Image 1 (cartoon, rainbow, N blue to C red):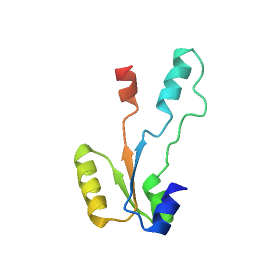
Image 2: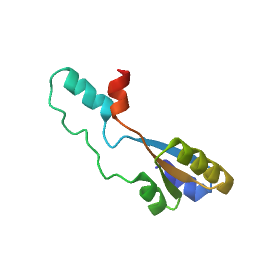
Image 3: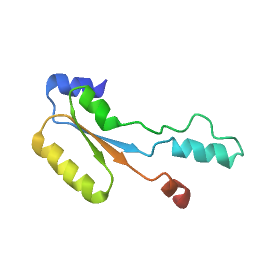
Length: 96
């Protein structure tokens, strides 16, 4: 796994996980074809905690201001960091 490798080698990598708590694009395609959305919800996944469990730093990001601060902190720290960036899946519907 990439996070474990970055921790083991002490790499200054920032992993940005765009977390919409679901597989939103797959869900949209299922609904577009009049299928029931199946297996697309991931509520409760905390990727920052998973990163910390693997020895990296981790932070949950809720806004653009939070992202700027979390990214600056991660780059300043220099070790591996997992940013769990929460995004709104409704934006996919608006854009598609």
